[in-house]
Length: 612
Image 1 (spheres, rainbow, N blue to C red):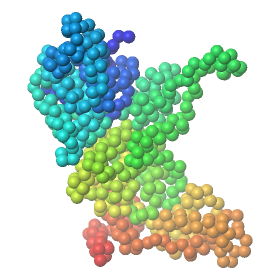
Image 2 (image 1 turned 180 degrees about the horizontal axis):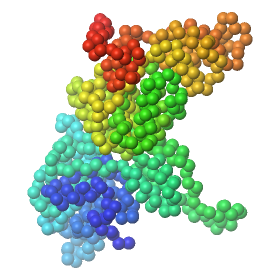
Image 3 (image 1 turned 135 degrees about the vertical axis):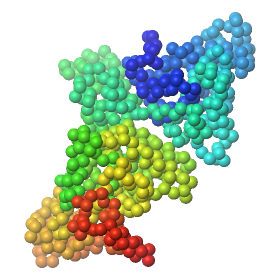
Image 4 (image 1 turned 180 degrees about the vertical axis):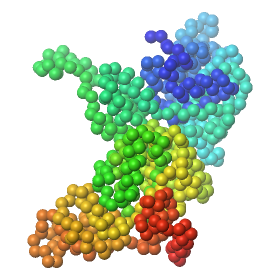
């Protein structure tokens, strides 16, 4: 099979096209490829491993292509390239002629010279030796070289200088020196450094203006569609579109493992003869159900981002949310925009603010269900090791960008994100700066929505809360009257599939005295009443247990239940919610017409009371 002309292929990946153009149009001769660098590549109607793709890409230029992987050592594309490398290394004195051509270079066939060099380098893993060999090839005039260094972050890792060993420091210095060498650049050479995360690579390399950093993204919609069509040529448009959507966020190799795993070995003659029914004659596994593909995708992404993200599939919508009608109306409008593809009308982010237990997280999950968006919960990506937090964040953002059409939920944003500071060596400042940059990317509007929940927005970085990152800020409060509390009670009953006989005339009097009870308190109260019923704990005046929850059981639970309440703190959190609200219509009547000066004065008094 002939090697296609990949540099001119119409389906050349965008990241490789950008590398090609920058290399041809500027003096940049060293590049860092980061992100999805260990995936397969679909180009020119063929599927390549990354090393094979790079070999084929540089083949038309007749460059000598040398690879180095610290776990595998040094290798070249084929015997012809091994022989060329052997000739250069002998002529430059890096290896002796006796090792490569015992009978002399003229009398030793190229295949033998290639085989001898392969044997000589077979067990060589040392980065210092490997980089010195590559440097010899790069500095050889008249023979351009493409040097591809895999796992470059393991060779020149990031970190404080004092924490790195001598080999790590010298490797970073050598790579830096290559980028500055006019001889290497003018010799039509190119150096590619492959790293999963840019933050894991030495800053001496990544912050060098003569090094081009290019992100290899996870495959987009069109990439996945083409790959699925390649794997299953007979795939129909309807299932193909469904698979394209369900495989968002996965690498091509992961898609292949799920959708088109290796087939079992062909049946033996005895097995063929044993097939008694017509349907048994057909070979090949049945296509996986979409639900099973979605579950495998969830497992893969959570394993890949172990402990950093959680993919969630909400089992409730707005019908399970009691009360909060103005908020549900506002969020339903956004959900309708998302489903209709009106991207310009979709906010970049939504900040849910209010005291704990008021239903922020529950409503966020319901919104994910209503909008049809996939939902991902961002968990703790902070790490105690230098550079790990930034690397974790980059990994998460890569997954989010690859998934697209997703709701990113951040619980307790004041704790997980917090304010910028330098007490941790500037990690928080860098993390928040990167997160703000990602959140305000205009290309994400309508595709990626951030929804952050917090009860202490005063602890968030002020610039993070501005429009363009959080276009809408929704305040949450405990239900304002018995009717709202009744709506929440009925929603709790529906959610937990509990049967009850609670007409309004019996329910409202019980809830009238529960002022200040949050949604979480009311849920706990309902569950307590159900437990009393199932446990046979009869309320006063009830002789026989009824089949469902009745008013006496709820009244008994309301009498016994003690809500955990820090009144001053909750009052302060409510004032913060009012302060952050982006729309007066979302405020309860008692706050709707409050003046800014009055609000600020009340906040100062509440803050002072807490400090005392």
